[in-house]
Image (cartoon, rainbow, N blue to C red; front, side, top):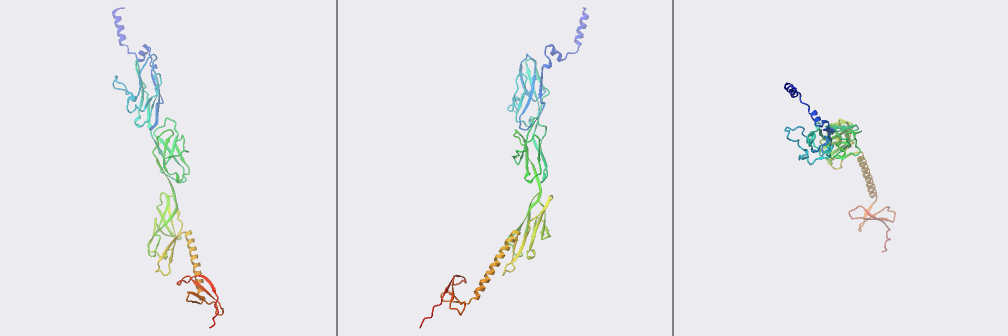
Length: 406
């Protein structure tokens, strides 16, 4: 072979394209298929303050030794002589990161008490006696809290749905727990993140929050208000003792949600005013009668029980007026009292008539001699209870003594 032939051959080898790395590795007996890291799953949605398992496996050529392996949240490094930061040596992670794998093929870790600051992409990296490798796909961690989505108010008797929402779909299959006013609704455990309240009652109003079974985190509370029409309006009267000419205020109060803002007043069946309070100035007998109030909100209306103003005059008083307020039960009691007073008056009249009918002569020993009949030879002596009283304690019959001979 001539010198020119050898020269041309060498030039052709020099000018040939470089062989790829894979080919070079195969020349040395090492295939890139022998190196690798895989993650399952590659995306994780975790609840705030919970623990996360990042499952991982890795492979490397047989016959070689693992020199170092670690997890990092940095994929690339600027200086080829530097290594990615090892999370197990980072104060932010060292107490929360636990390696569950081995030096063969398992590279799984547990990261506990995660927060939004932990939202990163995490990579497993290892180095052997001949080379180093990083699993570039990585694991993406998203941390979420829980929020209760509910209407601000619902009308009594209607149905309502409350939803426990997260910013991402939780990786772990979750069982939801619901709370009302910080008390667990133990009968409300479900894999569905919705809470259905049927035929809502006013007792269902309160602060609702949700959580996941087995986790300590509880969502912020959402307030649910149950609206209903007025119930049991009541009339209050001030002052309680009223004299003719005074000013009187009747106030109407009712239980409703939202609070009733519309009130109407009626005397008998006639509308006499509006507003929560009904004022009567310079009260007189013309104001006596039966009063009612009507309470109304956007869901309905309700009348109160009747209240009666009775004007009664005391004998001998200068037209002083006592206002007696009654309901139907109070009116019955007043009627009974009037009947008792009437019976007592009748009894007094009978006693006076009986006394006036008798002709009485008071003796020196404070005995009253009642002559029942002049033709009779007997009389009746009644012993006075006191010298100033007209009442008697005992009744005795005394026969007259025969006249003495002189």
